[in-house]
Amino acid sequence: MGAFHVKHDEDPATDSFYDTPLARELADLTARRRALEAIPLQYEGRRRVFTVSNQKGGVGKTTSTVNLAAAFAHMGATVLVVDLDPQGNASTALSIPHNAETPSVYDVLVDERPLFEVVQHSPESPRLFCAPSTIHLAGAEIELVSLVARERRLRTALEKYLSTEGADIDIVLVDCPPSLGLLTINAFTAADEVLIPIQCEYYALEGLSQLMGTVSMIQKHLNPTLSLSTILLTMYDGRTRLSQQVADEVRAHFPDQVLATVIPRSVRISEAPSFGQTVIAYDGQSVGAVAYREAAVEIVRRDEHRDDENTDAGLSAPTTEAEEREP
Image (cartoon, rainbow, N blue to C red; front, side):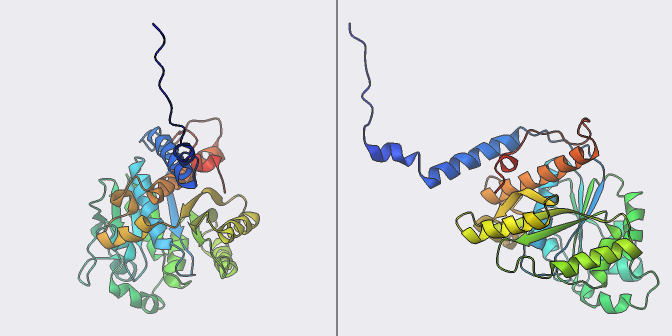
């Protein structure tokens, strides 16, 4: 009896579907999801305190703060977000109540209220906490001017909290207002590292020299251990030459700080805050959620390699797709 053969579809349109930009994009996203699934959900790295800052508005600062926080929590870290922006968008995105009567960071800075009294648990993750902002914070700059140790108020409160009630916190992310006033100076003085989101659009580096000057001043007078450790490229559109040009320019200026991972323009990232969620919770399989998770992994891995490439301290993880395909 002869062999049974199946006649294959010879329609070239069928085969060409698997070699379209959309098909390649979906295959890439699937591979990236699988790489993330292989990462152990246990954080064993050192405690890190970041201030997330860029006085240029609309760069994805708050969005990056809350989504990185959620990504770190997903990796097993216990995370605290300190919302220093009077707009309170980080608090909103984490579903944290922050009306005028809510104990907030304002009370910590102006009235020296203990930080543990204002920290709230985010319903998004058992490992995610937030010290919220309220509208009162808008006037804090003026009130702080006359206070003793006005630049160190957040640092003092944070150090006390992390040595007592907040001893389990692994990562702190301070979301700054888009300015270089006393609130931002408090954040720089309290932090070990600066994380700067930069959008892949015209004038991406506008104002960055002023921000770097502020960091230098803080290092000289208030916090000598502060370092610019991380630059995250946001709003990247791989379809445009402009995004690639901006990414290349930023990498040329800051080769050691820019992450290989870039955050793409994403409808899901934009929609999530209106539901009081990060994109990790809103649509964890979306390209935006995957990108923020990859960025968090890269931040942790970079620190491990910086400390000692031959040790297993921290979160050991396989290489993510983003690091292999740096744009």
